[in-house]
Image 1: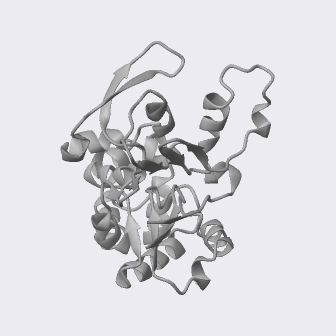
Image 2 (image 1 turned 180 degrees about the horizontal axis):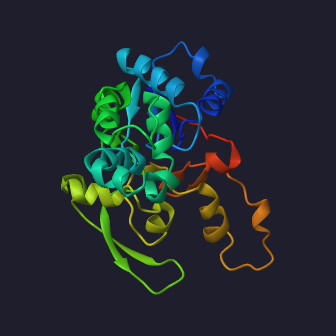
Length: 261
């Protein structure tokens, strides 16, 4: 099977279509599927087009959806709607993370004037919440690859170092519960990988944290002569990892890789 893989599209539908087109996705006559490694919506302005595209692929069984932290954000906005909208939605992390923009784009509500109950009711029946999020999975595994959003579950310890966290492998990570998978969606996979959280014989494909971080800190370290402006947003490759988040909201670029397995 051939897999076309993107991540962290964040409602930048046009940029995603451009990346897929450049890789030959729409001309491919052989069996293939699209894998989206989480964070399908929020930040960008094309949520309606993104929703329609994903629904069409779901109906044809041509897409695999990995749950990201932004899918979790949408669920938390719904579950805590009274607090979020009552407190002042513009003062919450849902505003800064773009979740509110997706709500408005998909439902047409006025997030400042409409009753929060009406907003939630309209949101619950959108294909995104009703059909797409329930189809997301924690990870997808093939013979040679594991596809996740942040990283595979591991133990995260606070650190006073520059990197803020130390990560310790969990042997039976496939068997952990929802709370540990929730935490895993927020992990910088490149950092966890560099600290030894790996899967023998597999390459883990992840998103969530912009690939330029790996190019800067893991390839150049503390080299003061490196100009951060010249660091690429292309996928970060190392033994056992491919990180593909192109930081689309900043760069206007969606990374797409093509894998055979």
